[in-house]
Image (cartoon, rainbow, N blue to C red; front, top):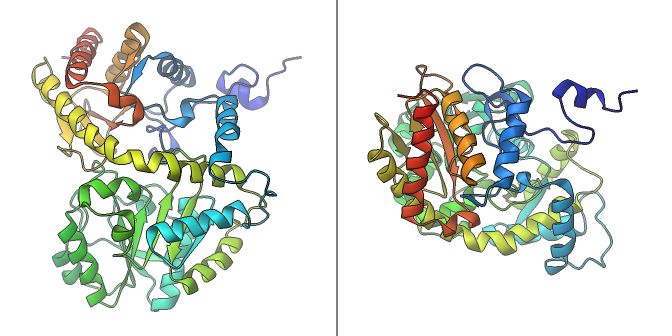
Length: 424
């Protein structure tokens, strides 16, 4: 009898072998419609497994996301390290007490808010925050960018689940400015700002622009909510602490698994009354979990160890981006784009005039043949001409050892493989 499970047979895996995530950005799991695309539909599973094996075997990478680790590796590391941030002789949490409550207090203090509530996902946290503000303001309209996460990656949940409607102050590839908020033709109860706005390249406004747009919303009797999934790495760009940034908003959601290398989980911070209401809605949405100590412990570790390192990642991302631009300018590619240049955080985009399958094959071959991984996954834009692709570059601890010369050399090798694959 075949001992493979039905999912394993379906996806061509060996018994007990985990599937590679099906999204274009394995670092945070927010691909278009939850799938990884190669420009012609969902990529074959065996190709994804090939890439994952190549990345794991590389000796030099710009980032080593936790999801590249095997299950046993993550569990062993968590068990070894968790005692540094919490007393492991304490009993486990039950329905949000214990270590989960300790994490809530830590984040509320860190971001300068009176209260915080832990959620299993950021999608749930923001659904609850926005519907709670709608009840308090009496206006169920949310102003946000059309490329913001709730619009681009949540299947219309704001309207389908929470009965909210959205309006878009701008369609430009940036956050709205104060003038656009002033001129919005209809009233709204909440302005939601994603910091940074991922889809156009992890872009941020200036500090003065952010202050002005928040003030403009309040002049229209609206509250301000920050989608701060990546708020932690915004501090360098703004020259402000996370608490100073969060202090511009009435409520903020932050993630633990994107930049802090946590297992999962999110936190909503805000006024005590809002947070207590959010606890009720969390239960109604099915988010009051029996135990969450692995996620909470990994979040505390991220705050302790990874948060202080983020400024160095942001600074080095600027070095990497500049060297990439120099490398492509000196190469045989007809054009390229680093977006934004310089990067606003430790993540940015690179655009090239080739089909994703050409670039992905070149990236895998470079990883397999040289043990160097410069790029991970290339994707076609959702709306755009054929023969164009982009990738998201993340610079973390593993990338700090790269010099500008290393980057330029890796670009030269990569472009050579692109040409061999049929790129012109």
